Amino acid sequence: MAMATTAGKSAGPRAAPRSFSARLMDGDQVAHVITFIFAASIMLITVLLVIVLWNHSVLPRNKFGLSFFTGRVWDPVAEQFGALPFVYGTLVTSALSLIIGVPLGLGAAIFLAELAPPKISDGLTFIIELLAAVPSVIYGLLGIFVVVPFVRTGLAPWLIRHFGFLPIFKGPCYGVSFLAAGLVLAIMIVPFIVSVSREVLLAVPRDQREAALALGSTRWESTWKVVVPFATTGILGSVFLAMARALGETMAVTMVVGNVTEIKTSLLAPGYSIAAVIANEFTEATGEIYLQALVELGLVLFLVTFVLNGLARLLILFTAQRGGTT
Amino acid sequence: MSAWAGSAHLKIRHGISYFMLGLAGLCALVVVGALFYILGYLMKNGGTSINLDFFTQLPKPVGETGGGMANAIVGSMKLLLLASLIGVPVGVIGGIYMAEFSGKISAFILQYTADLLNGVPSIVIGILAYTLVVLPMKHFSAIAGGFALGIMMIPITLRSTEEFLRGVPLALREGSMALGASKWRTIVSVVLPAAYRGILTAILLSLARVAGETAPLLFTALNNRYWSPGWNQPIASLPYMVWNYAISPYDDWHRQAWAAGLVLLAMVLLTNIVARVVLARGSNAMPR
Image (tube, rainbow over all chains, first blue to last red; front, side, top):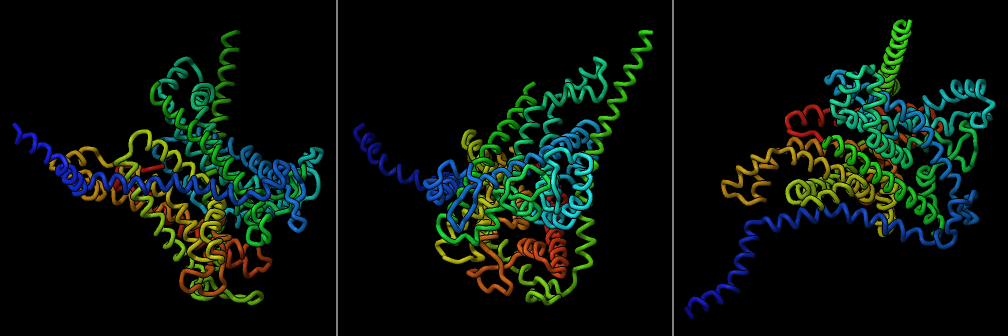
């Protein structure tokens, strides 16, 4: 009895290191911890981004506060930084791209999900997803040499002739403009809308369609009045995803928007965008506050796209789950 | 009378149906056509501009015609190598955690964060690399550019590795564990070999994605009109050259921008097609 207890006592401290080394030999704990450290680097990078962007934009935040976003004067020499022209340009070009891209993308997604035979649908979706893989600088290249001349000689004169009475189509057009940037962005964001919307539409339960058709609706009516409303949240998610992409797009916009720090109502006028000004002026930024003003613009871009992407993912997740349970 | 009116109404409804569905088909045609237009236009302009000099010569000084982008091609390769050194190990090993070890909540949080990080504009990643690498080193360098691209690779590689690993059937894991193998033994000798094509696909796709990135290189790797020996100097890259030459006022530079654009696009699209069609066919899952 006494021996048993001493044996039990002596085994206690000895057993602990053995089991630890046994677990080491097993490797499971070690592998768990090591792989976790690598996966957690995702969190680390995100936190680093916030810290870096925040710490490196102290000067303009203290000096200008919110007037940073309402000021119209961007004068690095006088150290006067108002970012309204860039914010305006970013919003206008993104809105324009959504106005063109959303109907186009949704239409294509409806065709791919509702009409095309599965094999053709998969093939076309593959091609459309390749469109998302095309580097943005290539879009910019085509923007400069195809879209800008087309806007200057074709689209703008036509718009001025027929809709010139509208303030958004007033004035001369040299090609580089909000309109050109919106057109290029529209093609760039369409693949995102198509691939996500198609999947959301395909996830709509089959009986929803069958019920609508059995009640005597036409193919289009079942699609537009039953399937699309069922998938609205997911489609909205794809639109947010596309919007985040349009807001943050740098190279293609820089190459066609004109890079002029002005706020014009006309879509035919040149402008600027947040990402474009960072791209163009970052290496030339002399003086601490100038550089930090550009970093603050980066911070804005980061926060806006972060929130938009977060919302988009939640909406898509929400529809996917609803489609699965009903 | 009413029956006739009804059938007329039905005809209109069917007419609208065909019209709207036709319109949807047209949308799909336009979007698919856009890719072929881009391809065709680049082949037309790039194909006539490309020559042997493009691959073997350095850029000529401003005002002289001719020359090539040999340094930019090598530069892009070096940047991608540096990016892979960061992106591949972190992404693949992190992906192993997500698929094999993570709990439900930790998996969700990490997936969500990875997707958000993937959506961060590339120019913002450039700012991160600038402050973390360029500022301490006090000059632009290949290392800084590779760092920026590597950071961008991590969430892409991680998410697709995870999805490919999740595609490996549970029965394989159970079989290995039933034979007495520990979990990490199972992963190393059963799961990873079963998913190696998928992991290769994941790596290729992430490489193709960052190969075309220009924005994060603008103030990290910058550019170099000459060879860039070692890793510690500014370095040229194909996407940067496309941008730089396209916005220049010289016709000969425009010609070379088309050539560089064609080479870049061919590289990116071929990698994508090889990764998705050839490699992914043999594996179990295909991530989005």
